[in-house]
Length: 125
Image (cartoon, rainbow, N blue to C red; front, side, top):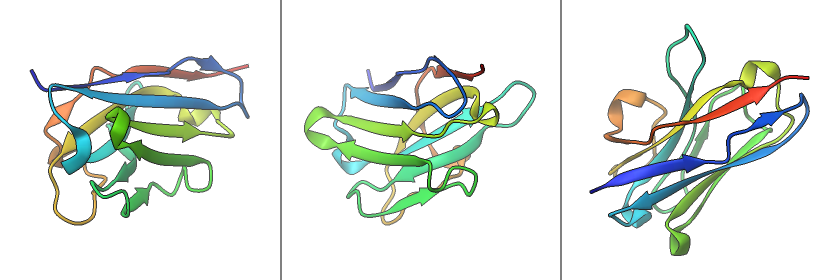
């Protein structure tokens, strides 16, 4: 069964950091673009960051540029989202998703076919 599993969500104070992980099972991530998305209560799911299969193509939502970094370790079949200087508005359920794209990745949820169950990030003092 092909699936991705997120981990690393937690409660953190404003200004703190978290690293989320997206691990694949049943398939190798090497040929897939990976996107991180988030959904807060009452809001639509939005794209946060994505990385192309080669790792050369990156995209970030403007709200996280300079604070979040997406990386991939194909040897570990895992993609990471390092989140620094977290703000209360970053609080959401974070999902990773995989899709086979040629070229650059996209921050459009509807383009991704494989989704994890999500991990909760809470930012509060």
